[in-house]
Length: 187
Image (cartoon, rainbow, N blue to C red):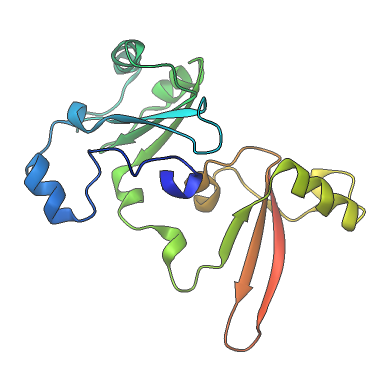
């Protein structure tokens, strides 16, 4: 997922290409703290993400402060991806929104399969600001809501970490038709 977002994760030593290699390196029940890592964006090195794995406990409002203090000593990052194995309470979600950086929470089962690699899934491309301006000029669009929408909570939007106002180019292809392109704006 991070590689698809443009982060340089190839150099990170904790990533193993296969499940067997991962289990041989970390064991059947690895310590979540040993799995945490940081990665920087390829085109913007100052844009860093910290990936952290929570244990099997339910994430409550009281645990959020502990997670924050664990991350204070690490390098400065713009985004935290927290991978949980159990549920997160609504009060904990509110606490995460108070943090000075963006926090994305994924359940471990959401990441078992790469949803963008399914054969029925179209090809996605995130447009840059310049490409978005060209698109708006080409089709005489003025506002974001003139494009078909995609919710920020959509699995594809979450996978790519899209923010409100970003435009996604969706290229559909099948055996009956060559291909056609649609655009979706995150709302």
